[in-house]
Amino acid sequence: MRPDGGDPEPDDYGLPRIDVVVPDDARELERDVVAYHRERRRRRRRARVRRLYRPLTRFGIAIPLIAGALLVALLSGVLMTALGPRPAPRPTSAQLAPRPSASPGRVGGLLPDRRVDLVTADRTSTRLRDLRPGVIAIVPPGYRCERVVAELAGRTREYTLNFWLVADPRPAGAGKPASLKELRACAGTAHNGAPQILEDRDGVLAGAYSPAPGTPGPTGTGITAVFVRPDGVVGEVVRAPRPGPALTGKVESLRSG
Picture 1: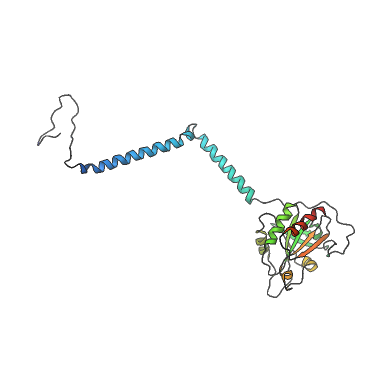
Picture 2: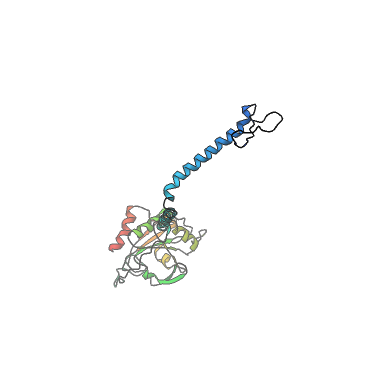
């Protein structure tokens, strides 16, 4: 303690002199008490963090790196499976039917002997009769994409068949033919399949199998599904198909056909 009006008294034991001031009011120590408790809390938090990370740092930085790499690999695999491109079915090696029961462009006959464009990154000219086996969906003017497109895409993929979308280019009053952009958007709704886009500028497919544009009722506003067997014969043409077991059976029959 400091005596009144003088220097600190000497210490008989040789200890360093300490200038201690005792406050008259204990409330003056409140800031020091708060700081002391704050420091204790900070030390406890650091100790808890060290206990949590101690198993990971026991072997150095190797364990966190391995765990991070495994997590990245797992997430990449999940994303590639969910969002990656699905392989398209390969064209059949079956021979065209030598003597169909009907003329080309009719049920029981081959597809017309004409060419269309297969639209991928670019356009590839292909024979209509090479589009087999699978389902060709002819989209009428003014068509609003329906659930049946996703249904056909999923079923054809399930049975390892092809599925194509093609617009009917014939004019229909106020209804405009579907553009390639609209066809791609419609194909994008089929998350369980891989529809391919065709461009038929001359309307060969629509003229052979679809009703005239503007036909009243669901027949004129829905798609026309053309079911092509492995031998190139058109087994059935369904106008305005609906999802369900009957449609599934028609797709499945293409494999045995």
